[in-house]
Image (cartoon, rainbow, N blue to C red; front, side, top):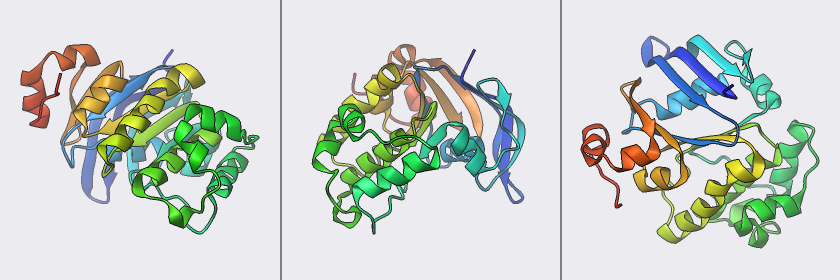
Length: 237
């Protein structure tokens, strides 16, 4: 059974529709990509899962339980964590305190050594202050903070946006290993096609709030015509 399943999910902001009957599923220990141009509905999908600022229809199942009517705090406590594109770390707190808060919210014991093992970049950041961090370092802390809560499902919204290629490569290696090492289901929304094709097993492509394509990542990597059609880009493979 899929740990997270969206069945005919629609969502709207006020009078404007954002998602229109999408179906997405991800298994424990699997990383799945959500691709699409700007405005395609990637972030709206994550907000719908988390119950944030949207009216939802359809059904969202987590471990077989219907969470469609839950509020964000309930969903987070149940075991779904999101790393938003804005990162939203607490700049006025130390990196360690950022992690402690996340662990406390889910009543988890913080294991710094485990976090550093999962994200080696954290080894040089753990004693820093939030306001001292670069964009890439903030992204690493945001991911580490989500992992500190030991989620069953991890949502990564544009994790490579605005980051230098060397930082992307360092984070990519760590992120790609998360499903196998933690057992979590990881859903990553990205415009960085190469990143998605190199880290995920399956992809969904969104366009104007609809799923217009779903396939194995390997099959999508071998279909430049589909990449151009839906994303106006192609992978470097």
